[in-house]
Image 1 (spheres, helix red, strand yellow):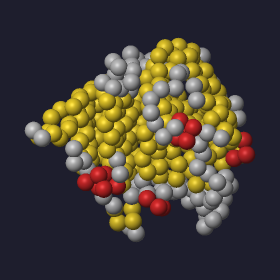
Image 2 (cartoon, rainbow, N blue to C red):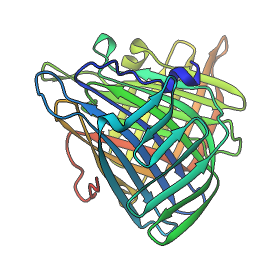
Image 3 (cartoon, rainbow, N blue to C red):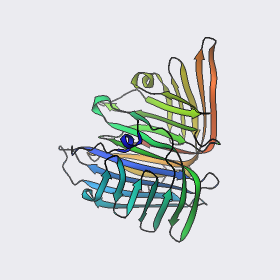
Length: 322
């Protein structure tokens, strides 16, 4: 998939649609992080309301103190180019190699070189409930961001940019992304989600990709996902995705105190509570099947990955800041 196709808007004026472009980055040497989200929300015909756009900034300073702000706009202020970029919303812009903007006392001015092949997965078949493309999985961002009176210098921080859209978020999900490895081209991206169908939980669907030592390993598609296993918890995520000749297995964990909560909205007004940590610990192993049996193809670990847990239920003890 080309980068322009990964970031192109999927909205064609239809009701019941949400869409968001995210940029997340974290300092591997401190608690500092930033999460910038541009989004819009169009209600369905069955629940008419006002279409809106939002700009989010959620960040932490080097000591871990959190700062979160949101600004709402009319949807006619949200503009995207033919390939998604440049994207502009109020005082903020997101382009293929830069991001700048402000929300209240938060400001950012970031740049990077576009790298990494996009990786995407859908979650609803023909119903197209929720889809995600990690458009730029291996960014190294530089520049500055400001929280209040504190200006932080960003020097080659691991970062990634993704594009999400659909008409309904999953009932529960977990997603991890990490490119804080010694090789700047290596990354891990795994996503597990579960939907409701006529009041019954569907099986968990998992998909993932690992790039290690120049080799790309991918497992996605409904059949493979349905055969996978995943344990999804607010501060722990275990996953196994196995195909005929490839398996991806790993674990992510973090402290609840390191998570920050936000609320996503479905077009029909439903709410999903998402809890994010930017310095979770990950261990992942890739195994390949040969004529001699299964053998390890790659193993990666890091202490600074982006993890997100989402559910229709709030997590006790973790504040929802937006």
